[in-house]
Length: 262
Image (cartoon, rainbow, N blue to C red; front, side, top):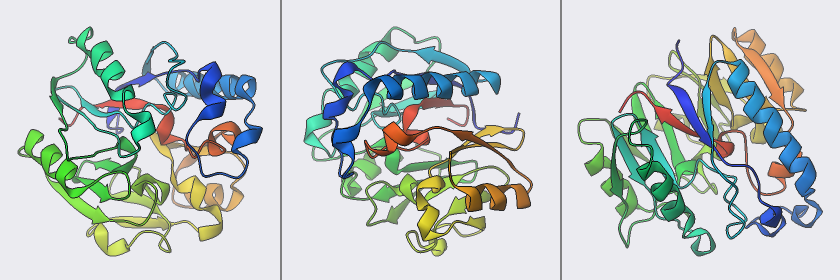
């Protein structure tokens, strides 16, 4: 299998999801029941693609906790528990760390980002040719330095970004192919990669998840992106994301893969 993980943690949206931190003007229109249904579809697709999925319990105290990618970077041998740049989300990472502590057969040695460092998973693009981390409003250079130290021996590159999270503008597929919106992310940040360039109008679809054998999970409704993926030899799998878009979340946000690289 050419994907970078075979196991992923997910967490369903809580009833409190309506109160998530979001800049989307439609945040108040979130339909929590619809979000739960969309999440079930997402999990079903992962499993159909052969990914082992571990479903953790909803956290009512943390409205954003469905966005499982952000609390940590998880690998088979090493794990880095982040520290949220968004103060309202702090505490989610401790809950996840506690849950991982009971699953030591699945994940590696755990490290923690310490103040003044901040690190959120949405800023981390994992590839088999290095790990690229966005220095953003949510992740700072101190957090990136601590990640690099914990992942000693792996290439960790800092990428300056004005995006909310780096993955809002690019996602890695396989074989050095990357989906990217050149209007949002500098192509020069990823030397040696090939790019499937996504228009600014469909930039939300850049937040995509490669699940192996040419299959790419993308949000539904982005026809030009789907066409470009097919033209590059990939099979887009569309997943309904409307209620997570309203919460400032994308396709990668809903899972925490356990990477086999580290």
